[in-house]
Length: 367
Image (cartoon, rainbow, N blue to C red; front, side, top):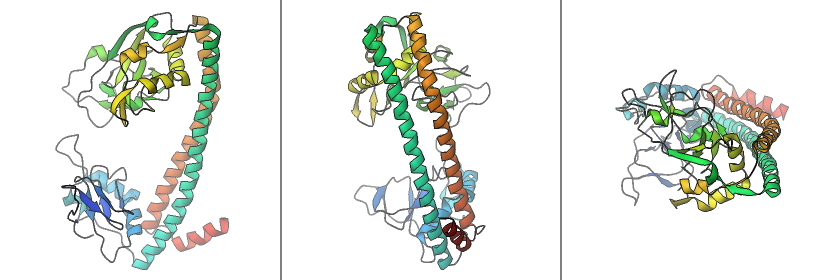
């Protein structure tokens, strides 16, 4: 594979990667953190950069080392002094055998995979565009209903209904989710576009005492406190198996009076009128991460609806968006299948289980 390239960067300690160099992120090899660079640039000193030998065709090596058999090997070699520094060491990575056919065969395999993965990537892009259109449709439906109600009955600040705003804490946790009756701390990704996912959590290390007052309860209204400008202030109502889940530092829990339901507030908070307010009030020194204050949330304007009107709005939005969500789930399954197909194709080609010459002729006939 060759020796690691010394840095010539003007940025002290950084490595320089050039076209044709193999770049390795030892902490994310299992997730595909390895590949051949197509551009010149500086990478973190935690990365590794290699110059490939003359018997190696870079595009082939790119596919080979990202294939599933190699990812499985990386998983076996992941080690760490602590849970938070898991990586594949050079001592394990360097002796790893390479399945290398003759150079001309490497070229044929790489050309085939470049063509076929480009075809899969185009399908993936079309599916993602369809998913985005469904999201826009959902937003339009919600905005129409919320705006119509606001124009009909007027608005009041949310502060009238807030009794308490809790901000949790984020102790150092394991990198994997909790199991069974273990304690876990919610991740920001537990709240996404108004939907709550209890599986998005990090396991609290054994011996770490949980702060019971931060345990999530069914029906809790949760609001993300910090994120990118597009995602900060995302909301969801907690449901499902939440026992043993803890509120982190980056998520607020909003306690409300009995005059307003958390589901109603969540739907209004997802509307364009509140999202615009959130993006105008969120603050931060960097546009990659901004924060929302509890006082900002208190100023959200919501339609002054009765309990009956609240229930009607939530029911109507859910009826309309449930159809969209079913279509979106179908697309997400298609995306998963495309990703699986891509990985299976690469693995079969680089390991010799697939004759790319025959496969290319078959693909051409079907096109």
